[in-house]
Image 1 (cartoon, protein in one colour):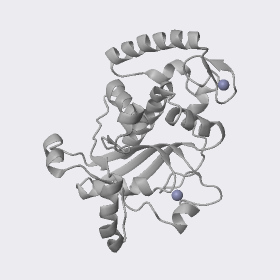
Image 2 (image 1 turned 180 degrees about the vertical axis):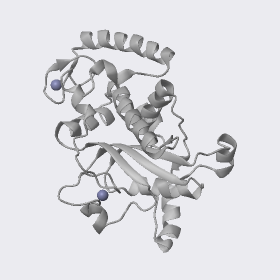
Image 3 (image 1 turned 120 degrees about the horizontal axis):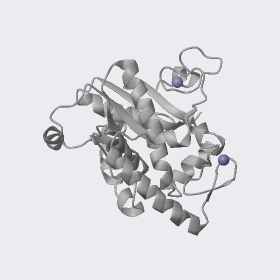
Image 4 (image 1 turned 135 degrees about the vertical axis):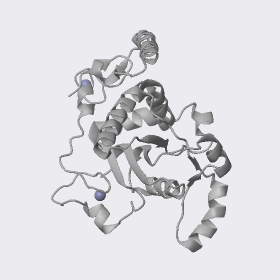
Length: 263
Ligand SMILES: [Zn+2]
Ligand SMILES: [Zn+2]
């Protein structure tokens, strides 16, 4: 278990300092506004909706054995879970990892972050993501850049932020992680047009690589391996669609880290 203060060992000192100042101001504002309530035990808290005693619970995944394909918890299965045996959706991916199961108070946590704009949770999620990224780098011996799963077009303009974009902001600023925005999400019209062609080919996707000319100019040297970042893994179709696109670019190994996985 990790103590609250150890969550933020940012590598960048300047960023760490600005973070301390920012949280100080946010704590004061939160105090005047009445604070938050811990989503796990209902105790009153400041700024983030998790209290000091419940926060360390975020650090432990709680899975003993996980599926080697999708990262779900294995309950009496060996090696590969029944989901992946019955419906092998993740074919382009070289490994999926999730940090938490999507159950009980953790469900409320994702809801609070994503739909109630509790952005104070972002650096905590980024810290957990970063820790998993480092352990994956150690395990594979590869330097891993992060590719964000892109938001719906216009989301940042409408809502003011996107959770994966913010996660990547902390990864880049706090730990100097290389972020490669290689993918884009299709609009409904683009998707409809493509669907007709893709239906004939038997595939459909809402994601595609950004324009090749732009990609080659912006990222002349692409890494051998990347990690897709998303908040929740459900059927795996989003991650699979993104991984399939990335492999078209010649990236040899594509992993994914999601914060939550739905059983
Ligand atoms: Zn609590
Ligand atoms: Zn599985």
